[in-house]
Length: 247
Length: 106
Image 1 (cartoon, chains in turn red, blue):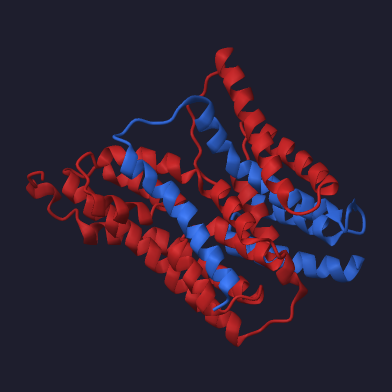
Image 2: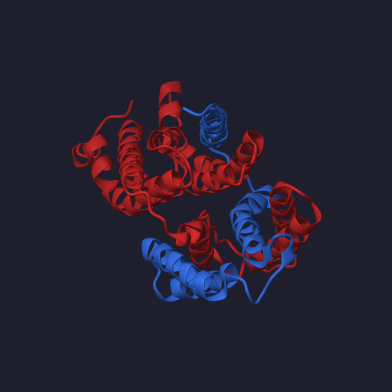
């Protein structure tokens, strides 16, 4: 337990909750979209809410409803979710040094709300908070505020979808549009090679192998070759420190 | 509650929460580096390609270019996002573009 100095008395749970507002506002339209699409793709609004409550990982939830819609097996969806969310290991590793004295309940609680967005905000804010006890409460506030927004707005979107069953062919393109937008915002010169490789492999393997196995094969191969290429460039001296955690 | 969906949510929760909590339980603060880090960082962009591109270019087992509303709606959505970087507007635009192209080319 650290001694609290007067300047950081206020930096606790409510401070974190207040900081989470930007994320909460950003999550709202995405969560409403998720709830709405989930109900259009055959889930009840309770099921949509349940998924947001327990999984709390945007991109993988959108992918899951698309795969459920296409009739993928539970294991296939689980494996894809793992592939999408294994990056959380990196974020978790980066925030762990803020809590050297953490207890088991705190570890379990702080890990629950770690997303791309809360990670970025926590990493920025926690370094200015003095004392591990304060940092724990600030992170809990940030995570809980964001989580609450994600869950509540999923339910609202689900209710809208339930009450307004829309007949509109555009809905079958909604998830692809979402993924394309994510692509446009995360494609850089440094990952373009992996992107092109994965795209070509996925198309070829989809035509060759029945089922959804092409997804995992092409991702593993492309990321494997992309990482090998980065290592090679690093070895030849074209080093870069830039890190991009976004999906 | 659909049992298939319940199983899906449980498995998704296990793998997602597992990725979040393991470093909290196992590490004192050291970080992964090198090949594994590069690999994990490249997974999201590779997955986006694998999810999107086959859906845009292959229809019922073969590559379709001209009479393919998915492909053209996809390209338009990509261009739209470059000028209007807003998730909600982008999805709205994509759906409308697809709906229009589907009527036009279908």
